[in-house]
Length: 134
Image (cartoon, rainbow, N blue to C red):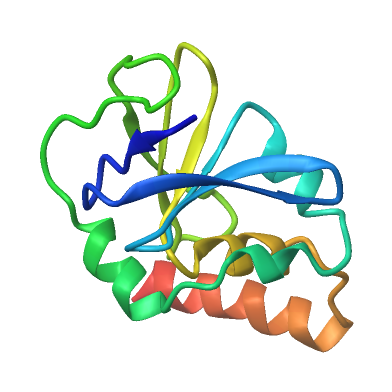
């Protein structure tokens, strides 16, 4: 997929990790995952190294307004929030099921699926309850 990034107009370059090919922007470092690729990669040790971008840059591009088109099939993307990690807003194609994560978001996405200690789990639950009641 040699296409322009729909966020910054950089080039989407194919990169492979663990036999899974994704496309990363050479400018903003966001990553396009075809259907289920992010789910496959989250379970592969070291795959977070694909996410080389600066999270602050990712937050900047996360606010990109307007209608964004899928780099795979040109269908309109839908903006969604991760149900477990509310700081991750991503774009998803309802047609081909591809997903775009801005710089820094794949690391957060993957970290959300790592085993947590009981203390970490309790802090997360209590943190959500404190935010919900405030």
